[in-house]
Length: 293
Image (tube, rainbow, N blue to C red):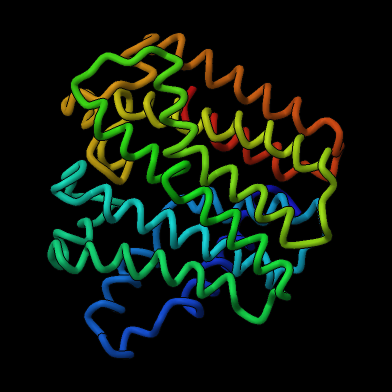
């Protein structure tokens, strides 16, 4: 199977699973469930679900277990996007090529969509595709990654940094929390969904995820100044307009491109102990970085 074929297979599985794990649109309160499905279904790169499935191949995780873990990750990710787009945060009106939830519906609905998706993620992880031990480990990984020492904490630093100069080290810390924590969780949860991975396996996957997570943000910063809104599916140039510190603003465009390539090489190096078994993870590192040249 080629990488493109594998990717399409995983994306089709995840889309079907999301449809299954989300409340149906006709279940009360129907307007809230309709908005949740609008936010989640039919869009996005699904990088976290892809990473989850790829890592699960290393521990022989069942596809159904990986589907559930991937859906939980995507629900947390989308909840963060819905809240991030609200007027009290980044105040954006386009996401994934369509109106943001607070524009399509209203601000109270957007707030509740995020809240409900966060809860639904943990409902999904406690489904009967996992035994109690797997449920506990996966819930802990996702909770840590999405809380104050992970994604939410990174968002807090991001909001406090608008209009302020950050050092490169401070910027990296922010992004390792805001973006990197959930990407790391995607890799770890994929591995934890199968046979118990060794400490060495998790350590190597952590190195890989750290490189890919940072590369993802560096590339996003590059695209914010080089791509148009139609390509991005969100408003281009908004970081600079809002006075947000980025890799491009701190080290420049050429250095940011070079950093992305170095992080790609670091990700590949971390996978060397796994050999050909980590092919999909290596290809995903390429996918993340090759969004820009």
